[in-house]
Image (cartoon, rainbow, N blue to C red; front, side, top):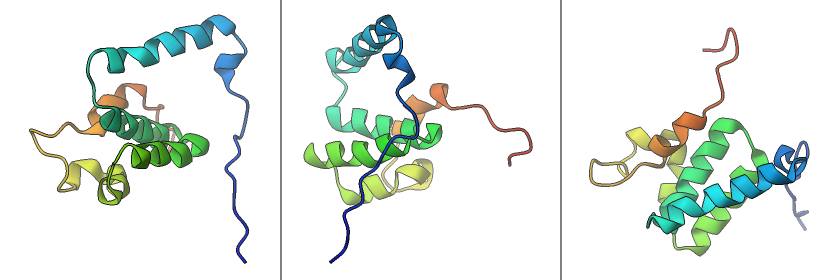
Amino acid sequence: MQEKLVMQERMGNPALVLPAAMQALNALSKVPVETGLSPKLLELVNLRASQINGCSVCVDGHPRIAKKLGETDERLFAIGAWRDSPYCRARSPCPDRGSHPYQRPRRPGAG
């Protein structure tokens, strides 16, 4: 019998240290929904941003949410190479486009 692995965060959420920061993040998270962005696409954006930012808990959680919303395995598996996948076309929004403003800076000496 295989043991079930549970993702654990590496450190506490910095936004929880300052209550005003968490309130601002919660308000910000409502904007895409209020503007009519598809919840499935929003989860793909969240997944891609989490991959870029290196948050393993979020990388584990966002695909689960997306699957519950009806996202396909193929699109979830291709998210890391979205631009080169057959799922990103001019008429189809790409999650990667929405996440790059939040990309962490390159480390010195990194490719």
